[in-house]
Length: 219
Ligand SMILES: CC(C)(COP(=O)(O)OP(=O)(O)OC[C@H]1O[C@@H](n2cnc3c(N)ncnc32)[C@H](O)[C@@H]1OP(=O)(O)O)[C@@H](O)C(=O)NCCC(=O)NCCS
Image 1 (cartoon, rainbow, N blue to C red):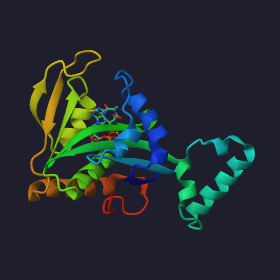
Image 2 (cartoon, helix red, strand yellow; image 1 turned 120 degrees about the vertical axis):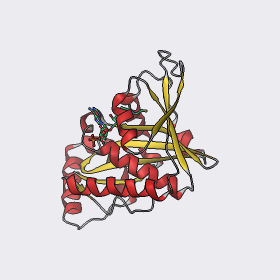
Image 3 (tube, rainbow, N blue to C red; image 1 turned 180 degrees about the vertical axis):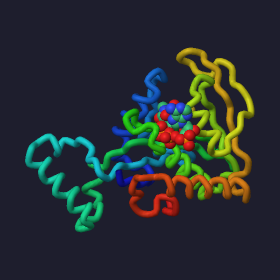
Image 4 (cartoon, rainbow, N blue to C red; image 1 turned 90 degrees about the vertical axis):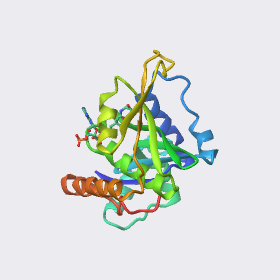
């Protein structure tokens, strides 16, 4: 895989909604991501697998599929740069979002396509989300997570979140409780040191190609 992360764009809304439905199908209605994008408090990032092209109307014809392959090979060889015209064919494999309220960033969603889970994509998204929160001058992150969602809780704990409370019957679909989790000051030296360590561990162990410098790009 060759991965990169960038801010959400309008052309991403269909794929993001598709990933949302796969991850949170019991939560109804689904968020309106187009409307979210018009909300100045809301911020989303998407992660893209550059070696896969998303199915688009153009790709439905044999000729266009061949053209797509040539473009992809051209990109690998460095002949083509990503242009605006290519964007609808970018294949989004996960996304994450937050709301900035005063100096607090509230994580609203993080999801990875099922077939890509367990490959550190969620961890990469978490790094991007924390970097984004720092850029937006947030001082801490908070979130709610289902008591049964141990995978997500492990991910958050790894990034320095701690349990700070319980919201009883928070989820409307099955009245499940939510664990409230929060970080210390994300601009503190100890938090940044831990984040840097996680980034280095990831770079050391990852067999994936991270296109551009995924950890230092300005989101
Ligand atoms: C939660 C989610 C985003 C994690 O993404 P992912 O790409 O599969 O996770 P990663 O491979 O990056 O793993 C990161 C950490 O998550 C935890 N984790 C991931 N898979 C796990 C598993 N099967 N069991 C236990 N912990 C797991 C681990 O702490 C892991 O770190 P480690 O590999 O160093 O131990 C993904 O499972 C998902 O989209 N779930 C559905 C949506 C959801 O529940 N979102 C959270 C809502 S609050």
